[in-house]
Image 1: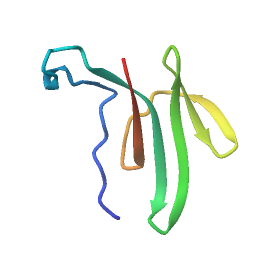
Image 2: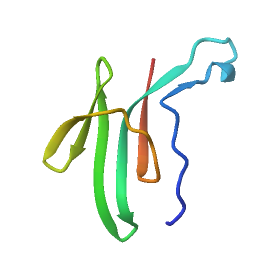
Image 3: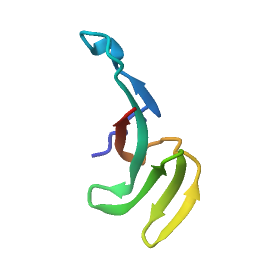
Image 4: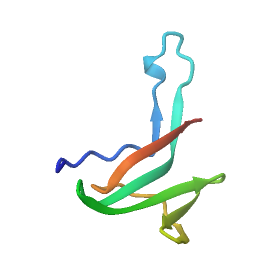
Length: 82
């Protein structure tokens, strides 16, 4: 697969899709990145703790990080209902 996906937003409000206008808001809390191609590569992840502290996970190393900014490596996005 060589098609690059578009990065998702850090927050989504889907209230306009509900019948009763009940708030339906989601926030990004994790991103899995893939560097390489369908034949192989390397995975990393960015995850947020409570309070919006972000960390990068890369093999055996976990380091504080800024919120992910997106890009072609973003492979899976995880959202939680606010």
